[in-house]
Image 1 (cartoon, rainbow, N blue to C red):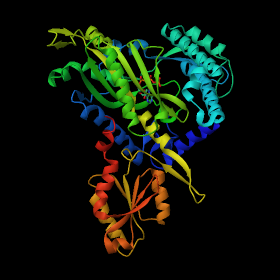
Image 2: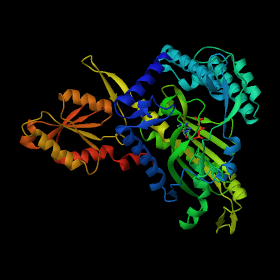
Image 3: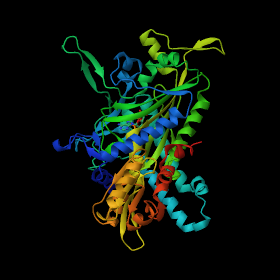
Image 4: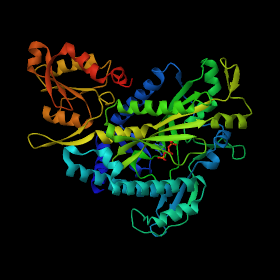
Length: 514
Ligand code: ATP
């Protein structure tokens, strides 16, 4: 646990030191769970967004984009169920006065049991060596099976109690499991209460005519209310999807996990409108398609897993998360939800307008069902960034910090480094910079010894460095250095553009998905 915490602290401080993420309004001591993206962070975020957008919109002829506003008519949130049901169960510790999400306390407890399973696996792997069959071990070892049963029983009870709004049972569960305040160890808990997560604000100048509004807690509703606009003007036929990225706001009860849980964050959502009755197959399709998108980035298959929901939201008939191994354990990165016709039917009911599709093949109109994929851009950022940050021991005994961000997402693709600041080397380096800058983000750095500059670029996540030296003046070749392997190759200046583009180009990476 302490090692995990240390690693997470390193992630946070590295993100700041290298211009990725700053606490918001830091000169005023920051604002809880709100963050700003610095010069490198903004590029990484843009690249992740674009990688998602291209995979969803550009590569699907039946998915189109949308950019709806953050403010929406307040009835939207009555229809969607957010006014009545967008709550989290909160619990306070009477001694420490700290506030927690009751469901998260229970889930963290099951994560501890899961850690015991992982420990058993590690021990057995060591004992059996090459003969170790992990799958068989997980399916047959009595101790592991007991732990798994325990986890399932706890999550089932939590799911059932939350579904029935039986908050007394959630508290009873916390007490029965002996869950203590993670910071102080106290078990002196208040009752569990529901807390609505939407931020309210007002529209209009005078107090008596002002209208109560909410900052949207998800981007999805902007898609639902525009369903017919897009369908009609785009002449879309079912099945089709609408994708959008944008800010969402939630007054999270506890937000102590850096950009994992923020009060202002960005979502990338896609609502796929389908014929009722086909939701099962589309659910399976999108579960698989979204995981493939993640795997194409090469962050390691072992860092992902599905988690099927026990407790379904009021709108869903099936739901699963894609979880990622964050520095604090496996947690939700993306949700795939089969939402039935809940949203469109509710908006029909509250607006009095028909939101239906005329199916020419069936010669009838119906309210489509919806399959949703919803991922947090900031959470994806954290997944990429935290898994990329590594301390590496080198052959000569020294260590280097390297940020192995997939080249396609890296903020800067290549740094141009003249070996020294004279003899005409900077001029050649500038010419290379000017040649490459049209197609990629390039950095120019001539300060310090070249070894230090390499280390700086490794830690900033730049996948390639190009060094201009005296030989360059003789034969127009440079040294191309690879961040991950530290391999160095002598290449012609005229080949640089093609070589770097091949490794960083989005289309090249996106082709791995199919
Ligand atoms: P959680 O259970 O972690 O609160 P959720 O199930 O409420 O998440 P959804 O409503 O399904 O999340 O939102 C879709 C995605 O938006 C999540 O998978 C996550 O990546 C992202 N997300 C949700 N809340 C936040 C937040 N407060 N900060 C950053 N990202 C978030």
